[in-house]
Length: 72
Ligand SMILES: [Zn+2]
Ligand SMILES: [Zn+2]
Image 1 (cartoon, rainbow, N blue to C red):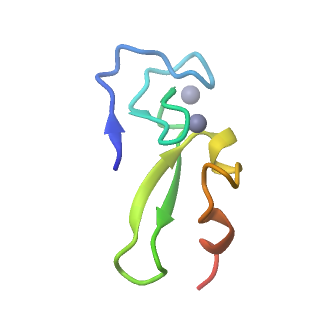
Image 2: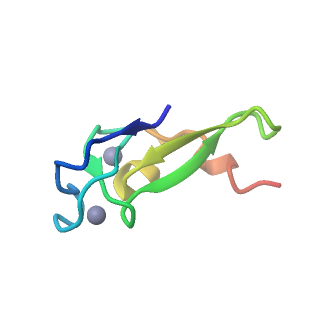
């Protein structure tokens, strides 16, 4: 589930842009250029979208589906 912010907080990654969403891993506000999307699910059409910062996106504990998300 994507948590949308009201834009009052500044992105915690670049500290320049207004935030648009919260990271699903660490709950930090992220702007449009710093957010990373990943599809969670079984690889069929029932996947759902997660939003992560760069750190969480690469953290296998936070984003265990990352390793399989590139498979077709
Ligand atoms: Zn940013
Ligand atoms: Zn994060």
